[in-house]
Amino acid sequence: MKLILMGAPGAGKGTQSAKISEKYNIPAIATGDILRGAIKEGTELGKLAKGYMDEGKLVPDEVVVGIIKDYLSTEACKNGFILDGFPRSIPQAEALDSILAKAGSEVTATVSIMIPDEMVMERIKGRALKEGRADDASEETINNRIVTYHNQTEPLIEYYNKSGKYHEIDGIGTIEEVQARIFSVMDKF
Ligand code: ADP
Image 1 (cartoon, rainbow, N blue to C red):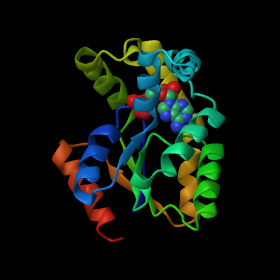
Image 2: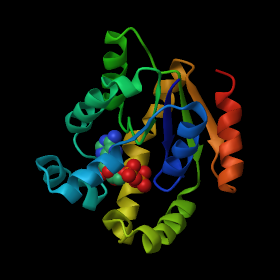
Image 3: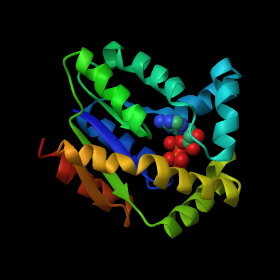
């Protein structure tokens, strides 16, 4: 199972990927978490990523592709994985396809958790109080992330639709309801 979890900021990708990881016993790889970890540790990667993240922009493709390439080559990812927050642009999706193709493999499916923009703002403001993420603190940054999602990430819907790998589920509801919708798609594979 090589699953991509897509969705706007605050759609619930992180919450749901943890549940999927448990049920299918495959690792969840979240580029946002990896980048935040690098910022916390003060590494070169963190220093580079911080400016983009604070502005709600994408970190350059070659940087995140490099991270993913390293992770996917590990033993832990041999039997499958969930990608949370990657790919986020067409060049990233193409790079992923080529990394997997070189290993004789391919993406199994992309599941997109859909929520309306108004809900993105509402949920992120709620999360900001609990998690204290820098990029959740300002309305301007949240708006930029919504715009980035529409402009750079949404074209992936067509990209994965063309290969018949795209599935969409409603992200409104309780964590358990959304989880059940995702599992009902995944159980078909
Ligand atoms: P959210 O989905 O709530 O925006 P993430 O933790 O997935 O949260 O991402 C936070 C930020 O990290 C993004 O706004 C972006 O700056 C950066 N980032 C994460 N994944 C990628 C990626 N695949 N490509 C480029 N930038 C990324």
